[in-house]
Length: 358
Image (cartoon, rainbow, N blue to C red):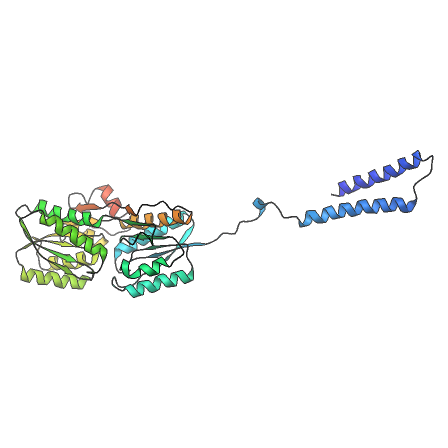
């Protein structure tokens, strides 16, 4: 800048000298020369000041890092299943620079408490919500009032209030459990279902899927579907009653982690390993129950994948994606003693290698 100012002043002075020569030796008046120089200096000063106040290019400004938050609400915090969901959700969020606000009830039947969590998260601020609803119909209006994208998992919700549901086909998965029993016990016999929450859409789908498949095999008798609210103690007590009322029971199908854990423990305690037991969901305890024979098979949903894929869908929605399918189907696997040692199966059951397996 100083160089530019010096050049300008030199030019003005040279012009004054030349003017004096052209005027036959008459020099410019001192005040005129001073005025010209002052105006030039003023112009340069104004340019300098303008350059000082001019905004730097946008790319040179340090970008403010906004914290992105995705709310994640499980059906309950009681089960290991949802711990794996949480891990998958956190990993997906971290990969894209988001954080997770994870909250849930300590009951899988407390719809009011879950609704309060949704409202609290909305007040606190979030960019999207991922939820496994306890009762989709009861919470529908609350979800519909949200101004952020909503992704549901493990339990379908009205497509008008959520972009997609990430879930297995629960009817088909439970039907696979019935088909497994029919294959292993060709002579048929009495079968019971130790189920979970009677009011849950997902549990109703599982109950229905199992019952409809079992009806295709006329040698079997379904003695009843018994709801435990997912409580392992209640499941154990129901299993004990079933052993007393139906000592000739040949198989039992359990509809979630709590029911599977309680029923299989009672079978083990009573020494009834002759009863074929098929569980639903996977946890460290249930996997080890296959190892020790108190469970014969598990229907596994890959909970880590549910959490990961649900949050990934939420991030896509935040970025503007709208063309989701109503249901984003997630795979399930039937796991038993024949395949549980397969490295690919272990990767599904324990993707992080953190479980203490036998």
